[in-house]
Amino acid sequence: MDIQCDKCGILVPTLKLLKIHKYKKHSGLIFTCNLCQYQSTNRYHLKRHVNSKHELTFLFCQQCNFKSTRFDALQLHTNFKHKNITFVCYICRSSFQSKSLLNRHMKTVHSSKKVLQRYSKNQ
Image (cartoon, rainbow, N blue to C red; front, side):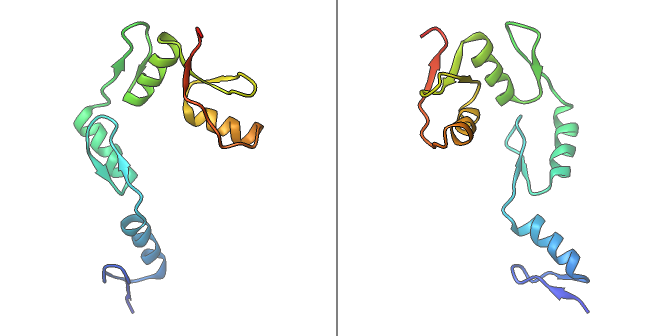
């Protein structure tokens, strides 16, 4: 006896397949290509897209030998290593490469959610 999805009406033979279907189709989880606007609800489909459309195109740092397939990783590298942009804890003056790392530091070390904007190491 088939089980019907309460969201879209599709029929599947087992409860396990229904759970998988709901996770893949109705969870709202979306995987986005870092090199273009492609999106998928399936991680494997995104990997297949990147391999077939972009052939793992590397982005190179213009100032050193760093390379990445992700634009956000290259931007983070450039800001931290070459532009001296960092995020600084206003309590202990520790510096971090990204706002998310500073947020994690604030929550775990200082039990605070307050975060200030980026600062230059030279200030």
